[in-house]
Image 1: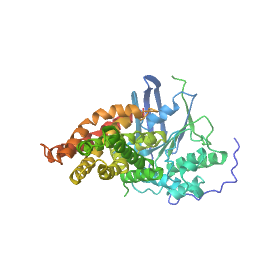
Image 2: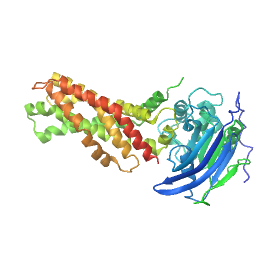
Image 3: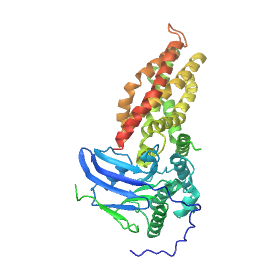
Image 4: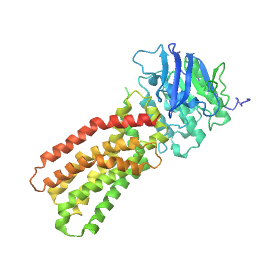
Length: 227
Length: 223
């Protein structure tokens, strides 16, 4: 897909950017049931720092279920989800970002207030790889709307603020459920660039999608063949 | 150093202030309930003075219930609830903080309005003070017990009525000891301290137990 790359100013690279210590996500023999029905079974893969995995499959194949289970929001029937290389005390849930269909934004609050809340709620020690809310809004091209209540914004703009949430707190694993939904072509280019930068910082990405994301040498996990 | 629970508290207060409905709605509902009671019971001052604390308590109970159904539902709909799981703070504490913010925006205004509404029910100074004090001690328990119902019905589109059915029976002890403490203050055989101490104990027990029950309900709602 040809995307216009010229009209978006290239953002400055992050100061003091450094790679995360090498992490490795290992999923073994994962089985998940929803509503008494076994949705996924015998699923296993590994993902190392800097790698990306695209989860594909028809509607209802279990893409969102897999991401929710990886985020720790669904109980597992069997199997392990381990993040190797993290400190002992780290809960897996505090090492990941989860971008679901809902954007996690409060409509009465402004874009900046929403991002400040998530930055302080999710963030712990200051991390040089985390951006300030103002910088993150700039990276998604919404700096001019930072003082606008989210209720006034379009679906695509809300989606971009939700993407900015991933930037205000650095977490190595991004779980993206249909990240391109409601995004226009220019925003998809921005998203592709954000994902590339995240991988360059040593991050990992697992994205469930029906559309090309512009990720280079991403592996693909096709669901539905086994169930 | 950052305080995730403090920012959650402040966010909920800010959202409540921007929306502006919940506190005013609760207090107006309280006012309407207390105002229509004399129409049903009759304008006899002695009767109103005697049953005034009970009317105030029932009205406060229903008013606080009215505001509760959106406690977690708004967070579920906009996706915040899933993200609470990813924070470092346990979900139980997040629930407790949300209840605290909810009480500040609904329970506290009801308590502050009670002495003024009590004047409409022929309450004397002692009775006004006693009702206000019991509401101050008892409304946190109403919010916390209500949080269980709000969490259990969070995925239901129109769970308000079901929540009321679930929560009202559980609030009976709060009502009994709240009203009996308020009435004991204006005379009677029981001292004020005994029922009031039990009321405080119920609130403290709710403070310790309800966040766990509500968080468990929210976890299963996310599955």
